Length: 327
Image (tube, rainbow, N blue to C red; front, side, top):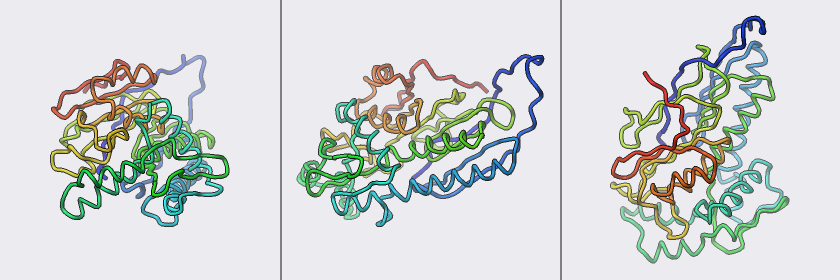
C-alpha cells in the first residue's frame, strides 16, 4: 500500500509568560521505523527522560504489533482470520472487540455506509483481478448477498456472523485504532511530544523545533505534489484514496466499496478527515467516499470533523476548520 501522507515540522506553540514558568529541560528525541499493516510505520517522540522515552517507544511498537496480529487478514492465526474462517470467535481479544464495537457504532450512525463485512466483495474483485478481468455482475451479486453489518453480532464474550460465508475486513479502521492506542500509551508513560504514523497520523505536542507539527497531504494522482500543508491541532488525520489498490486503470473500481451497491463509489479520488480519534477519522473517510463530494461538508458538520477531498476530475474541496500552513 502506498503512503498518502508526508510529514513536516513547523511553527511553534505559544508559551507561558517567562515569570510563570521554569525553563524546561531540553527534550531527547528518538525515532522508531518498522513494517506493519503493509507499509512503513514510524514513531518520533521527545521527552526529558531518555530511559522513559525508550521504554515508551518499545511499548508503543509492541502495542501496534499486537493490534496487527489480531486484525491482519494475511496472518491465518490472527483473531480476525479465525473469525472469518469459522464464522465465530469466542473470547475476542480486547483491541479487536473495541474496534468491532466502534465499527458497528459508525455503521449504525452512517446508515450502513461504513461496513466491515464488505470483505466478500474485495475477495470477488481480487479473484477476478488475478484472472485478468473484472468480476461479472453475477459474481458481485453473490458476494453482495454476504454483506451486511447487522448480521455481525458483537458481544463481550463472542463475535459471530449470522449468515454463512460472511467475512470482515478491518483495513478501514485498524490503523486509526493503532494511532489512538499509541497516543494513549505515550501519554500514560509521560511522553507528550510525538508524531505517530501508523498509516494514519496522530500528532502530540510540539516537534523538535519547538513548533507545531506540519502535515503535507499528498495529491492522489501525483506522489510528488501536495494538496495542502496543514498545521496539526491535536486531532488525528486519516486519508483514504482510490489509487493504492485499484482493480481498474481508470480507478473506477477500487478497494473502497459502497455496501448498498456492492461496487466502488465513483465520485471521489481521495478524502482526508481530521477527528478527535484516529479510528473515527479512518472510518469516516469511507463514509464520505460512499456519500460523494456533494455531501461531504454536511457530513463533516454532523460528525463534528473536518474534511479535505479531491474528486475524480481533480476538483478540490475543504471544510473551514483546517489550519493551513504557508511556505
